[in-house]
Image (cartoon, rainbow, N blue to C red):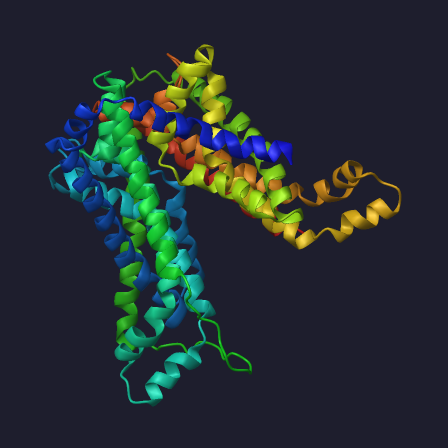
Length: 509
């Protein structure tokens, strides 16, 4: 129990100190800070960006999910797999691809003579983030459609409603929980993103926080901006819970659920396939083609010797952070499943709260706490690894918790009946059964840490660099050919990690 309590407390201590630091502001200064025109501007920009990303991601994902679940289009499995792969491409790499596609030296002008303006502002940021996050909506809606009883829609049709009216009045309300949970994930990611938004030159709360802190303008102002971002994230969490509370979507009748009827598209099959192909081209083809183009244009004076060192830098934080996150996740999941209570539920929720907190406020809180309590750790690899592990530990808690629920306590009880002590029974029986879930959780964390940018930018030691930092810095400086190797490696890292995770799931007995 004690390790789990310590792990949960570690999530809250930096954030509590952020509140303490912000509260040190004089009341006379507080109104001036909160009511600045710039504060209002970046707050409204943040909300506009979240709304735009949600709308565009849903406009992509909802039709795509309907195509693969309700129609007779061929290659449904291929469409589904390709629709999930953009999750391996970080938002800032997607922004790099969109920027690298345009301009005088971009591939569109080089091959077709098309000189598109550089994407930027709200449109550019929303497009980059939507092409990265739409798989969250797609996967949720697809699962909901596959689990929906077709008798509900058929009953509406039998009452004389058109297919469109039946979908709007019956199917869509049953998709609301799936949409709300996906929207929450997308909204939290958009709130916490910095790289893609900064590359698109759009001022939001996250970029304002980083600017105020990195340029040492007003640290207290940065703290209050961070609290405002936290408040918006908390509001989204509360809103999602309130909208989903008390909804009953299960079947109330008996009998076997019929299979979902397939809609024959006829001549509309090709437009449906064209829509899917366009989505895959934009989300996968453009990044791949742009990276390949700029790699082929890289001059001879590019310092390729720095690439292996950058890979090692990424591994030096991603591997220990994944190990530490798993070390946090196992005791937290164990107490939550074996000894359920308000205390253990609260401990588990703390890990998810740490993940829900946008990365920049979390990093800023860690900075304030470190400087005040353990200044020797400031800008060291140790504090960077700890912060990354704490922020992403929830990704490891989920798989471990599910596996513990599947195993149940009786296996350990049987071992104890043969004379094993409780710790020995856990080590010899439960822990081996958790190995694949622990590996899956570690891979989740590894992928997230390898792609992480805001926390690394703020907490990294001087001179330390990762692949994510190189993609961002070189794209920000306009050196697209120098960013290309690191962007390619980022995608390769994510793809290999996902393949390993899927293989471990496939091999599970």
